[in-house]
Amino acid sequence: METTENNKLIAEFMGIEDDNANLEYQTSWDWLMPVVREALMLIDINKLDFDTDALKCEVLDLDLKHAYIEVIRFINWYNKQN
Image (cartoon, rainbow, N blue to C red; front, side, top):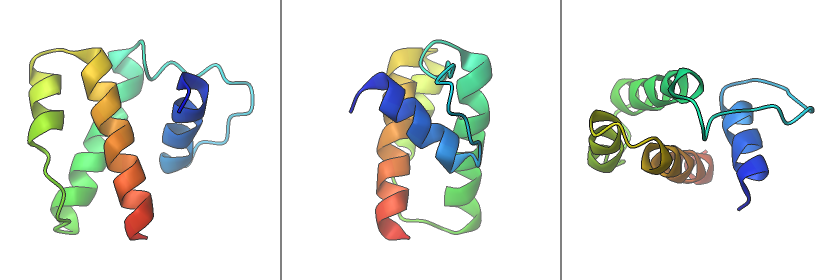
């Protein structure tokens, strides 16, 4: 998937309708961290069977690129479950 498509996937997951594609999830922790929080909360509250270790490690290592990739991986997994 292309970055624009991935960002739209994230926006949709977050309930944001944005047709202008000015989404910065891949370049900004300020954009990505609310998504990480939402994903981790969903996993915890719903007791989802998704391994969060990689996502947590990427965040703790301050690796924005790989945290972004892990968020996309989670959202794709989550969408297949629902």
